[in-house]
Length: 460
Image 1: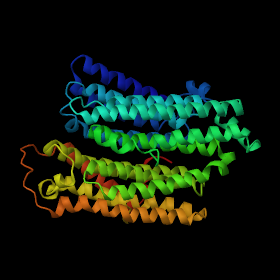
Image 2: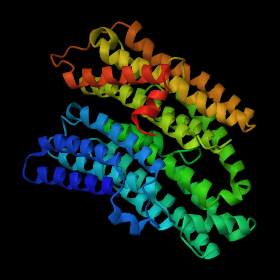
Image 3: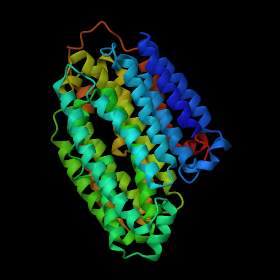
């Protein structure tokens, strides 16, 4: 809860910087606040909040996911100066909204009952509806905001209906009391229906097919930096909340919902990777890539063991690093050429080699090529599922990974093997972008070669 307070105060300060026409300082305020929050995340939670442990508990797992979310947000803030160069009039609001959304993620990492879950989801989601439509001169951004809001409202309806049924059967909002009721009443129809409705709502939040239909349009229409935030921090928060809900509250009726999750996994991996192959727009391709990675992450439900939270955190962190690495290049190309087609990336490797290398290494990691963090992340999930006896699901995931290599390679080939002379701009890549590119390349390769570094850095 201490981290939540730090982040919320930082969001207010960033917002008021815009009120006093000092919006250009909002990013620096945000970065400073995030660094303080990262420091606080390593400390035990204040004893004052012990009275609220039935609502929010800053456990070891909550601390782990809080740390990786803050680090990812820091990277996004570092590249935000150039990305928001055409949002000078309201960039303070965008930084503040990202911080508020991150605060919602922190609530989701420590929630202990269904009321806190709902509050966390809404704090996380409502700023996203606004940010998705923040590019007021682009009709696609307005469409993205409206589509995301409407679909989000339907998902919230499913969630609340499920909460009502679960409370009606178990008589409590507490996760552990619901778990106890589920163990003693595994065939209670109201509880089972409620769990499935809540599963559907969470599947929407993490964009599992067929609940993904909003994702490509919203990801393409939203400003690129906001898309990067949605594909990383929002996914981290959503998946941890999803895992915690289904394994703690509904662990006693796992047989009633695990097959549904398996079907969603298979449909997601096949549909997303096939659709990724036929895209001609890099941003839309990355949207389907994000959906496919939701499928890989869903393997965490199969063969659960004591290392599962660590495996989930490692995968989501590796994926987030790669996503930021690719979006750095995409943001630059979009600014220079005002489009994000594959052809727009032609010659980027010659013009801005460090940016292109960071994007290439990131996509290689996303594809799960050895000696990258993405490979070790996928290997840990695949190994867990195989030990649990779910070899068929792993085969589907391997097939999906093979398909993904094709569309990642298309972008890599465009950057390094096609000549293009239309990068005629006097604006050079900033020192900040170069530093972040080096950090991402180093982190992806280091975690791929020595994954225990993740454990040491995040204090497990």
